[in-house]
Image 1 (cartoon, rainbow, N blue to C red):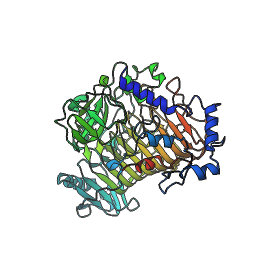
Image 2: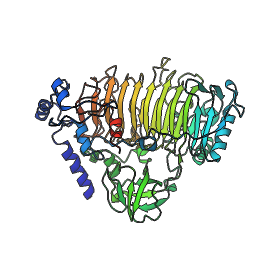
Image 3: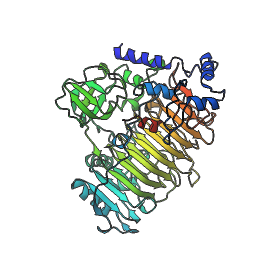
Image 4: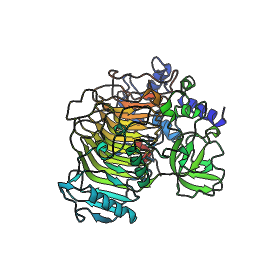
Length: 595
């Protein structure tokens, strides 16, 4: 057994000592002792004395202030995390998720095109897509800038395409600039059959958008293949995993949470460069097991028949190089997984990539159609970011879509102040195909305006396909659920969300486990008390379910993919919000730790 692997398991074991595991919650003398020591009552509520003397006061952003001098420390998950922020067993590090490693400052490039000056009509009387796309292309070829769409309603009969770096498409605000889309992706590009087997299902059910951010070469390859009825692989490396050119091998094992790796040859690596860490699974599927925290049940789980899951290999994690000292390379973010020799660890180039582009202040209004049956979407989809890094969408409202907002092989992107509303969606938000470290904040899913079509389904906020480090923060969901859509996502966070939990998760049987390790659901209020997909301590390995409201099982009820102890944690059950030793918002509290 690898030495690093043994060390990691020991760290996980020691960190859980003295805390309540999934199997030991009821009747535990440890739990009784902890409750007495911290002032936690049987309902999970802290006493007034505990709150006033041990916890301190919450800041405006929800980060807990230090306890008064001499006060007893409350042994919470948060205080554990502060001692081990990059390698905590249950809580992932997400403090650098989003554009610019979580920066709230975005570029405001000079306005270089105004579509009204180019002939677009703001009254919806003519197709404005050719004018808008020509302006985007011209500005992109010139090195970037802002394309302005003044107030009005602009009819678009084609896809709005952003394929160059540093291009911002800016409206006057989602209540003032409207793109009215009249045709579906199927009408514009063609029928898009699933690449998984001989399925008749439409891949527009989870891909593509009528505002589509994607590197120009990648977009042309994708759409060309679809027109030829040859669905391509959507991810970072195209149809050929070897398309990513290796730059050097990593030659020394590293632990999850490490920033530094040792490489064979650093001559091709430069500080600031955007590269990709790649890991291959082995014949024992130990990489997949590690993504699940190496819980005991991974040894008896059948991996070999999970054909869809296995098609995602290799694991691709884009990361920026912070510094190079000899053969030691420091990364800008901590490793989300350990690095072991048997996984052929390497640093490669990123074959398809677009950076620094955004969409702001626009409503994407799709012509109202009947909501399709499940997996039969025609592609009335809103906005997609695909093979993008450090891009953003702000103040975007999608109305009457099949799918609202999609992140497909996206890295470090931010969607802020976004909203999905109208007749009902398949995915209001989806995050798939190895999308990592993205932030969706201040988001909303409105109650649907139409009775669901028989046979249709809604997932809500989705994550799948080996995606990790993604955050959904400060959300209101009047429909949907926390959809972990199989495909072994791991290390993702949902925090400070109010939800009417009425959706269903998805995922085919050959896509593998529903959850990998280190999911954190933190401060969640469920208005209809449904437990499924929110209270995950019984199903998700090494997970943290913290400060959720009281829920009960009904509707879709899941069992864990793994037998044995999951090493999950349940804390402050029934008491959403901030509390003793507990910040209100897990992401914002981690951001406050970034120096």
